[in-house]
Length: 312
Image (cartoon, rainbow, N blue to C red; front, side):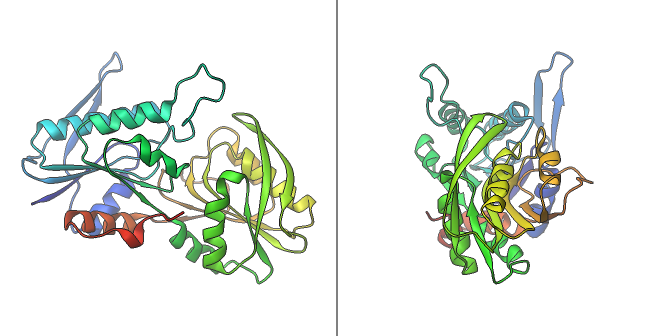
């Protein structure tokens, strides 16, 4: 079965790098917006009987990129793809997985339904905000992790007296994996979210005094959680500067200004979403193309992904 890789509009550089790992060019497609805002998608290569992979993180603008993904899936299905896989390095709406007030949408479930019914046979995602999202999908979800490659990147910056910091309870499992890989102790910051852009830190579990903090999380959106965590551990006696590690660098709203104001020696992220050139931060971007290219190769050959899967 022939292998074909298409890219949406969200992260063309990552898609090109993945295709290059396979010695391929990206499939030709047209994504156009009509004057009224409607999206028109057309595939310009024959894919009948092919094993097709569509690479499209649902990063901001979230709804536009989600529609790109769904329309590309529908076009591929109607063009006769034998098998169709979504490669979604960053999956949006993952935090809206339950009703907090009782009169709101469970958006994560709705998005899962849209993806599941759009023609995809399988979904590949990286470091989901909640691993429990797998149960929302009617198709198999392969949950990969960038933690091992991010841990390798941070290892060269890790002093002997460092401590891994989970900025909230939701990041504890991820922090445990970093701590194990790097052989470091761990601390947890207790956080309360006040709004979409504001959080408060209320306490710390674990010893941080005299240690350099390495704050780890699955995503950085407005930077409020990282800001609160760094300030909390420094107030508790941690030694600056700090290192921040995240799988997904959305960096929206006041994120850049917040992070610039912190004593950071390095911000280490992946290229799961496009990071604007010239961001005034000490940023190091770790490429995901080898990981995702390996996942595509194994899926194409019907081989196991066990050592790539996120555990815990």
